[in-house]
Image (cartoon, rainbow, N blue to C red; front, side, top):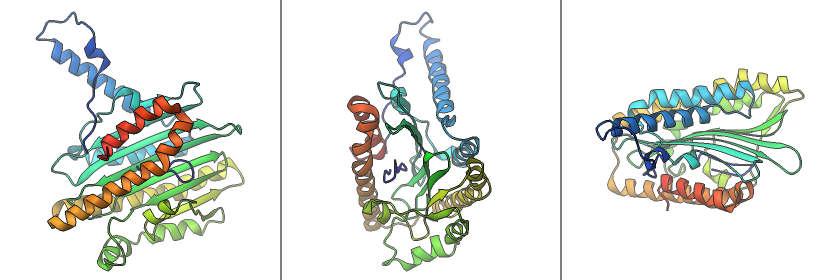
Length: 319
């Protein structure tokens, strides 16, 4: 998903949206009722989007980063994105005892767009050891009309002074068999410079996921980093002065070189399209199996987990 939950967690037709307001008798006339219901759904959708954009459990710097990235994605791709159609109890949910809460925002791409879907999420979970796990994630997935890479940024934090950063354009073609792909999307764009620049900071070290699947899914230029600061203020400074510009520049590369250019020059043969579709579905299915199927029941309980994971699978096209 664009969710790589916890320290290994990863991570299109959208499910139909049924507003709870439509099940109640209305005092409006039949002519006015559709307009009133539509307005109510719009208002409810706006409320749920604002709830997602709150990113309530993270620092102001981190919240601003996530808001800026999500706003940029939605503003730049607005004409290509459909409204979020997830049910309300999937867009925002918590576990029975209130120790975990999450928000999910998925927008599918228009049929004529290279966008398959964009997904954003935040998860807050109190761990029995007394610390809180806070994960914020935004990803963009392209459909098989293009071979271009996807986009992911995720921050995973269980300490006020440290966090894990994952920032990448995950490849969708074999880089050994397709050296031109490596050159076009990674060498020519200078993506590795962001990882190298961040690693120059004394507080930043490479992060190695214990999951072989996660490690295989990212490009050679991926910023998979652990940031350990002596003070919370120093972590905020690194987020503001180094992580934020790097994330915005990687997103810009994706929007300009992967989405915009591919939209203008889509030349994909049927065999290549089918191979991309198989790879995309296999990746999404394995991501859910490796992480959501394992971790969500622990965080949110079986009932909530089953409902949410089913909706995600439907949105991912892997039911």
